[in-house]
Length: 237
Image (cartoon, rainbow, N blue to C red; front, top):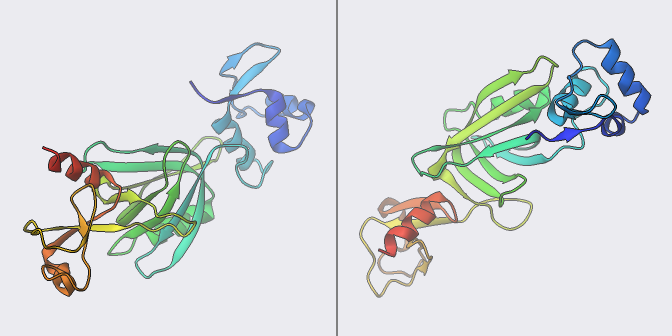
């Protein structure tokens, strides 16, 4: 079921009277047609209406829609914040799969997103806050895979990243993600590293087994993500 709005709600979004919206419906052949309701009280697809209002300069940016807040960090350390309206987030069940996020964007934001994610080493999502899910973070390889312009002129952007890179964003608006490591050989009883439910750990300087030599012998993954869940399930067997 689409998210539907009445003429009065369209008028509120555009800050005009209901009569003005009725006039747009009659005068503009590309105004989105009703998707339900009655002749007296027609219902419209909210996303299509917002795209039309944006394309016809009736509003400055999409409004009154669920939005995702996205902080992207480029390969050079440049961090930018974006808003995606009408977001659609699909998270893979398999760590070998791919997560995707799409939403309505301005042309300027879409261009900046494409530039940030076009680097040789990929970009990272410092923090993604979207309706219906906990804040996420992705350590790298985020890219724009599609830019679609609707008939009404709205621009929809889709990003994707390997599901195994997904983690839980740290507390606070800055985002970030805690990284856990899995040793190539299981650690002994004497290991003083901080342990996590997934079986991963974060080494400390005075751990005889890892310490400052942890990098080469650890397989790192984002904390709280799909990889964590898979490792935790394996460790319980």
